[in-house]
Amino acid sequence: VVAPFTTNRPSVAPIADLLREGRGALATSFAGYKYCIHYGLLNSVLKFKTYWYGVAQAMTTAYFQDLLGFLSLSWAMSLARPAPILANNRPTSSL
Image (cartoon, rainbow, N blue to C red; front, top):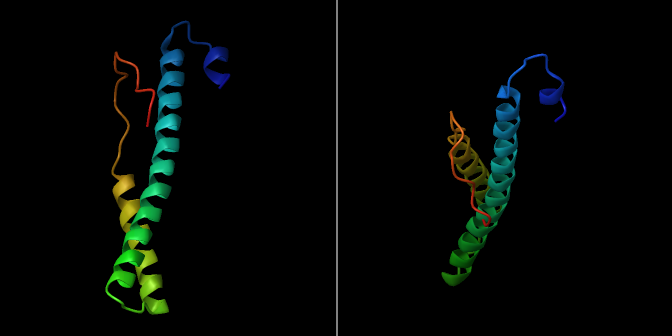
């Protein structure tokens, strides 16, 4: 965090870099939170469906469900890219 303030460049560009990295860290932490919530919801819905239809889920099916859910959510979240420039408006204050 201190690196942009100890640079030899006589401009304010390091401050923009610091803001960009801060927003990226905030977006990453929100994405991790959303990942945990969606993964839990996916497992809950699938468990509810198996109980609703009276189907016993085999252990290999549970492993496959975890693998498929983990890989698909990880792939979907990896598609998010950072913005090339800073926006003029502030990010929202809520999730």
